Image 1 (cartoon, rainbow, N blue to C red):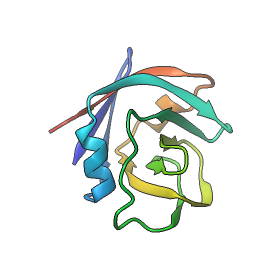
Image 2: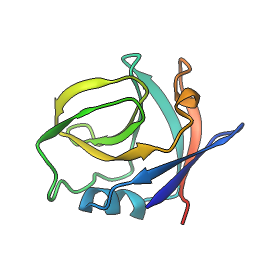
Image 3: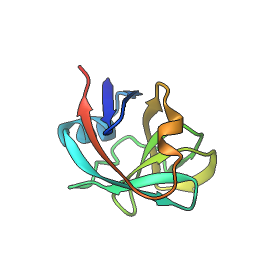
Image 4: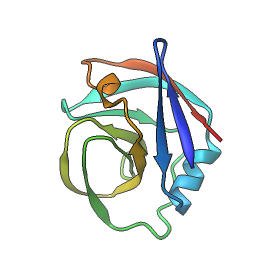
Length: 116
């Protein structure tokens, strides 16, 4: 499954895993919101509705470029730095490139849409 992050100056693609959580996420697309910087490690945004945790592990470790869902808060996470294990974190996929677009400080407006 492919998605696009559409910014005002460029587009970044990503490949998602095939899982119940990912299918729930795809069903909410397209989405437009501000990605907020969190802990100088990741960009986050709250989804309109929570994703299922069916079949998901209790948590995962993440690397820069990973796209995840943090179930306790109901938010989408795009990691731009490596991150250790977190309970409640579900990996949805990975950026195909363009990680540098996510590393600027502060928030950024983006539209996420299906690329298929």
